[in-house]
Length: 89
Image (cartoon, rainbow, N blue to C red; front, side, top):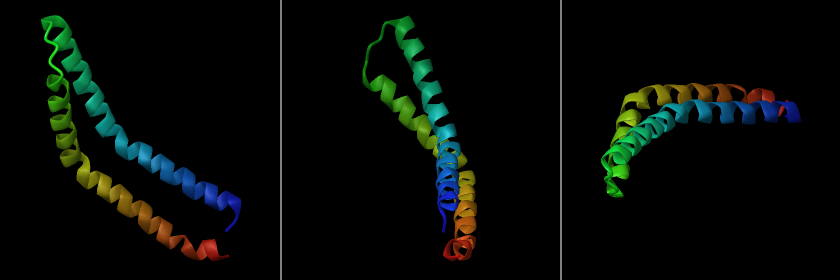
């Protein structure tokens, strides 16, 4: 295995990580922003009010995007296993 092949595998892994966590991060960011706007307009400064909706939204997004995330991970793993003979030389 040469350096270019190893860099290609690492780059693919990082790309897949970014693609897989993007929907969850965007969901958490959006819910956090909405809750912050609600807190600012109503002057409610309860600390638990920020965490509970975010946790619920993130769990729902994992439930919704979970099958897609697993398919992407399985496809990446299959491609990685298929490239093992190329690693040997």
